[in-house]
Amino acid sequence: MLYSIYNNGKKYGYLGFDWKQIISEFGESMDTRFDVNEFPRSYKSLWKTPIRVSFDDCEGLNGSAIPDIAEHQGRLFLNTKAYDVLYDLLKNDGEFLPVIYELGEGFMFNPLSLANSQSDLDLKLCVKNEWGDVENIAFNEDNVKRFTIFKTEYDRYYSVYCQDCVKTAVEQSGLKGVIFTPDLGNYLGSPESTEESN
Image 1 (tube, one colour):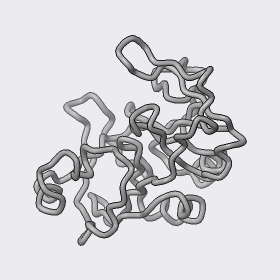
Image 2 (cartoon, rainbow, N blue to C red):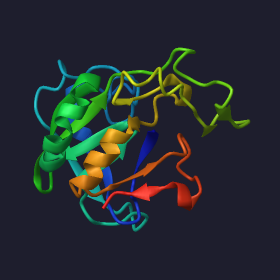
Image 3 (tube, one colour):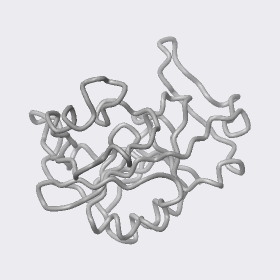
């Protein structure tokens, strides 16, 4: 089974980047900045030093707790515990980029595996509304078994999708901060379709 991964914003702070450091490292162009560009490209050669990130409550719109794992534009923040749990599962589908945050060291996982071919997507079940926003996305699950975690151009690479083994590893390890939903690409799906990590 496949899942979308989203933040549990009711309990946990929103991931923010040190924008001055980002501009210093990657330049001002939106095409190269990691914090605002979700396009799947490798940053490993550009990532010279750990990037500073932090979690805040977005003026009361989010919770204030610091998560073990967080989603940001189709990428994942992992504290060291989450990194240790998920490294072997994710290592073939992207890169781990070092960050520092309020509680120490962590990583941003940058997914680079892409499900973009017509055989990957079940286009009969993929739906966008009149503004081009994704209302539903579906994959041919046999064709995307080669990925543990991946992104797709269909939603402009904005979300991250994973196999059941990622959800299981997060839940069994007690990692906190994200919600898994089988209602792919639809964060506002019905409450009964979402499952929160412990």
